[in-house]
Amino acid sequence: KRRSIYLRRPLPHPPVEISDHRHRMTPDTVSNPTWFPLSAMTPNIPLVLGTGAAAAAIFAVGYYRGRLTAPGMRVGGSAFASINKPTAGARFEQKLLRGPQKLQLYSLGTPNGQKVTCLLEELGVPYDATFINIGSGDQFGSGFVALNPNSKIPALLDLDAPGGGEQRIFESGAILMYLAEKYHSDLLPSEPKRRAECLSWLFMNVGAAPYFGNFGHFSVYAPGAKTGDVMPYARDRFKIETQRLCAVLEMQLSDGRPYLLDTQLTIADLAWLPWIICLDKFYKARQELELDSTYPNLMKWCERLLARPAIALGMQVNGFSAPPGLKNYSTAGKK
Image (cartoon, rainbow, N blue to C red; front, side, top):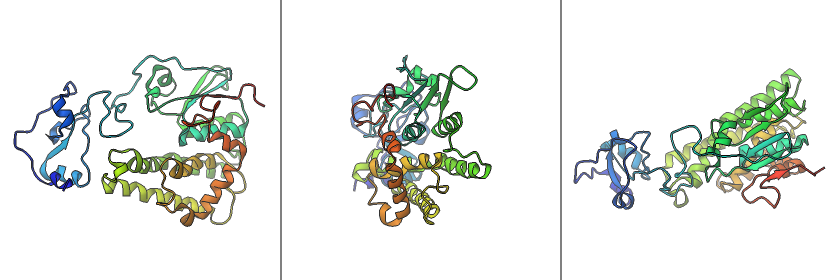
């Protein structure tokens, strides 16, 4: 019954015309969804999508039922609705913390951040890791934007870069490569063929991780996700692709090799591990995806990596629920 309202043309009055982002909400528009013409859907005015059959109905009747949102307003149950904007650049002045080490990491214990902290721990190099709360918008401060104009964690500042001076590095894959090369680590093989294989798996992760993220978005974070009231096509599309990617990794590991390349750990393993763990830890989809029964070699690989002390520690750094001393972390004073 709830979804049926999207399948009729509810136009008791002419549709409201919306001109630009200066429109302000009234108590009525907050509490009562309104039907708007498709012409009103501009990047400056985000509209909260209806559920279920809504998408098909939008194009069938030419009108959209939703609520106008104003900057800074949390609407529809999404944890990020209040900070998402179609703009770039700093939104407020910010001075980032800086510790005593030459490597300054600004990150969060989500998969892309965990890639880097796992590598730093495996390398055994000194670093400071400052917690960036993306839920409250820390990534849009002037200090963070100066390190990563794309406002995404992680961001790294090397105060002792090759050739001298400072160097910023953003994007998790780029950071993994930079650190492995700087410290001449075997985690990025030097032999041309093995290096090419390693980079192939690394870049596969960089391109594929958003499919995992979107599966999580429509499963956990999107409005209606917790009640199952989201568009089935969107969720199923990213679920299927997540399963396919897990199957690719399972196939690679099916010959009994301990790591993705062969018998040696590489940054490719460190890139993929946090995203597989995320399916269970953050998205609570271990049973739904049948991870243990469908991808047994992949799950054994996860266990093998997590048994390494450096990776076990790296997975905890900058976490929301990290133990004391790990939310904001420094190797200063540690062996």
